[in-house]
Length: 308
Image 1: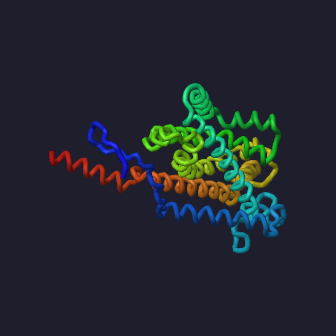
Image 2: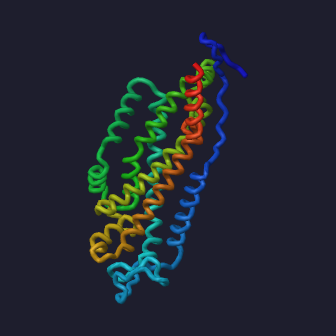
Image 3: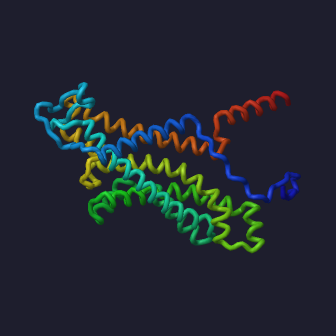
């Protein structure tokens, strides 16, 4: 293995590190299973002949039963059918907005991390601004300018969420650029594009899975909040609109918990699964975050102190 000896006597490798094998724990597998199940439910709602607007006036606020598992709403519509139909817009907006956020954040993060001087400073200040900008007022202004629509909502949420990915990518790129194997490639005459594609991006791409999972969770939560406050204006049935309709029609005053709890529970489950997946990916990419590893380090440090 090629390497150099620093003055401290520590050997430093000049070779590029091998890609880390990704090992998913039980929490990640559970998260993937949950997300796959919800994706299948969303697809079923997309293609099965379900009518969320079908009304049965004899079952207004009817509680759950064997034939209707989640009961009916204030107009006698089946809540389970609405829940299945609403899964598609909720998940599509979450995934699409996260993709927009990762694309914008990843691109600007690479530019900021690889460049130096004024460009890095400007992009860093832009990231700081979007981290602290209030989401709902910003979404209200942009939606009022662009007009309602599902595509506009996706872009607005993506713009709101890109800064976190950009900061993570920027830090990784700046760290990677200072690695000895990158400096060796520069000394051998490698161009910027070659260094980015060959040495920097392979170290950045794994982080996209972590930030992307969190972005999906935040996008779904943001969409639900905008729909609840009536700021999205998409005109489609989603979990957020179900919660808004439930509160507008006094579901809780009529003890119709089955109209409110299911969409909120679905949002919580999907967000939790995305968080589990992001947490597991982060631990797999950085084993120092592992609980077992931290316990070993603590035990070793305590033993060393006792021995001293």
